[in-house]
Amino acid sequence: MRTPWIRPVALAAAACALTLGLTVPAAAEPATPVGYPAGSSATRFTGLAFDTCTAPTVAQLTAWKASPYRAVGIYIGGPNRTCAQPQLTASWVNTVSRLGWRLIPIYMGRQAPCTFRANATEITGSQAAAQGTASAADAIAKAKALGLLPGSAIYGDMEHYNASDSSCQAVVLRYLSSWTKELHRQGYLSGIYAHINSGAQHLSLAYPSTSYARPDALWIARWDLNSALTGWPGISNNKWANHQRAKQYRGDHNETWNGVTLNIDSDRFDAPVATVAYNYTMTSSRPLASRTGPSMGYAAVATYQPRSVVRVVCQVTGTKVGTTSVWNKLTSGAFITDYYVNTLSNTGYTSWLPQCSYPYQTTVDGLTKRSGPGTTYGALGSMPVGSLAWVVCQRLGTKVGTTAVWDRLDDRSWVTDYYVATPSQTTFSKPAHRC
Image 1 (cartoon, rainbow, N blue to C red):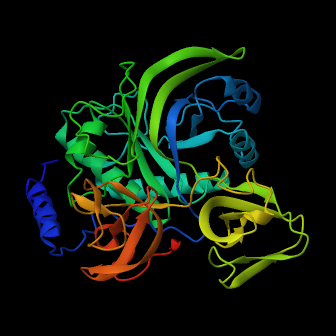
Image 2: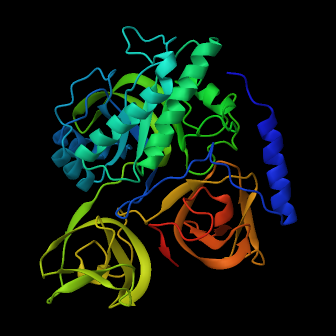
Image 3: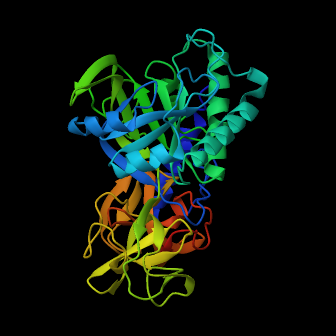
């Protein structure tokens, strides 16, 4: 692939326009919109993780709660997956999630035509785009069968290949671009696992390119025993900068925790992972309605009888009911007050349930974060291009470009929606609720 040199100039011009208060349109690529359905949300994990060829048993993961790891990579499918996965069922996912494990879905898709991996099923150069789309569709089907909801990140595994082969590089990028676009189309986030000296470098070079869709998260393999998520050779810290990085820093080795030995790779994560639903029981003494938003003022959707089981995806702040302002978002996309649900807290958030958020990539460099929904509010910093804006909710504010919509992020800052790759640049984007 020839690196398009004009794109950095365009990005600089966009940043300048933003500083001057001018407007520039958001590009369709490299930041493609994610089509989150109603019952979706993203989940982020920050901490130590491990991956192993065959998913551990429930008993093994129960023992490994004594370890420093709190997330586990699972190989959900792909033509190059090598190990049997007798544990990978929806029931297993539900059980280990209730134990407190975050899950990192990995899809062992087609490999580079110049791969170093023996006997691999490879990408066909002339069909790279179609095969990338097909791989993503298959990965989503496998994820759904396990109960991994839209909003989950799925990591395509691209093993080490000959980085000096330019035609092979272009094939890989076409394949991964289509992988990303199909995941986004169906409401999932795109992650890529790649070697620091091949796929990761090529994705970094293509980061600003309008020819390729950019993945939302990068997980590198570099077995140097250094778990840092910055300072990666050849990859600027401004790329995949906002909870979008992971590193496999130690390769195959045995570790024993609580008497159980597993052969693992060690990873550090600060990136999106799988979203799952958790079953909880209604505690109200009378029927209670779920609603279209996090307030009793929203329209009723469905009625739940006392002791009914509801499937909770994430939590948001809404109007206060009883002792809490927390509302639960259900897999239906409707909301129900947490006051009448047997989660762990009756006053605040339940630590294990994620805050509802919908990440989209930013489309200009230096996007200013503000203390309120308008250009007159104080600046709270800025975001590099391609950063994930973890949108919690939206409301109207100062008009920028074609929209007066502003996005509230999970760190309580605000950015104009005009420079975020949401589905609409004129109005609100579902499923984020109104702030």
